[in-house]
Image (cartoon, rainbow, N blue to C red; front, side, top):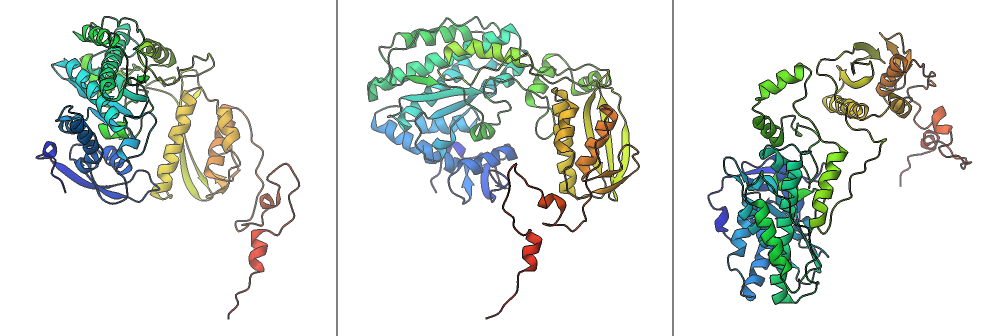
Length: 497
């Protein structure tokens, strides 16, 4: 195994990780401080199914770039700089680069918060150098590609580190200046690559002057200088050099919390703890987590979330500088955004038994009595089933807080059939239920919609393939008559040779 000097002395850990729950786990080696999400991303990015090491997997795509750079007499230390960029979690290429697959437009993502140093601010020079490095690497990797995509991720995390709210004018000014710096340096690098591989693209298109990013000293001047240098180039090697793409494994590997230029929609991470961005915004306001909790209990929300309008405004601010952008967020008047429940809210707890299995249903309400959340507790169920039902209740709560009517959930989940089911005890509003979900939404229909759902058809417990529902047509047409699975099983005979 080749020794890679950049990674020497880096404390690592080995763990079992899988790209998704349906994939067999593999052993991966990565820096000890990187989380399990990064381990799963490495398991997905590294080709094959054998044990994978981050330095080795990265060297597989970095080495061909370095060899081509040496052949052209370009920077001899490009391999070291690419390894350092990854080690510091500042940037990584798209999955197809890791896997050695051809791509019409190879991409590279830069993690914006990684360029911010507490007490020092945003490293604009380091960001500009990283853009040059990424554009050079993509060109050397695929010189025949007419377009490359150098992009950014976790804009909201950087804004939080700078003490800026996402919807503020100052935040859009910083973002636009960053986009202008990204575009200018990427185009300028493409012009340099044109001397090696030819100018396939036209001269750079004119871009508007970047706004004054007062929150980051020197950023606007650096962006203006980069755009001016690119504009003076006679031609580019690429027709496009910048893009903002959906988040994927490279972003997870880098520890990105929000994809692209989107705002954060929750202050909590997958582990249930405050995100880095949330902690940074609290620090910018001079609030501790304890003070934030006290504010929540007092009915205040110290974690405001941006809706579609600020996201659309941010999209518009960056669009003039980026070649390929995601779709602009829709400003549909009927689109509902999350309505936060009061920290201290009313509701009730309903205990019942469905088919002999105890269930506890808790509700949370808005001040006007509308249902805003539900929670389910099961005593006799297995741990996986309890976790599944808890996650289901959380998903329903999110839907309610985004404006989905209770009626929609009632229509979707009443009459669902799975065990436990049967007689309901302890709840006078519901007599029988065909499943736990059927019970929950019958109860909610009775208490929040003042509706009684018609009783479900009873079926014997052992009616696999022979119950009334099995004989009912599944489609609005005449189906061929055939014996049920139960009848077919009766016709089977065990025979010997």
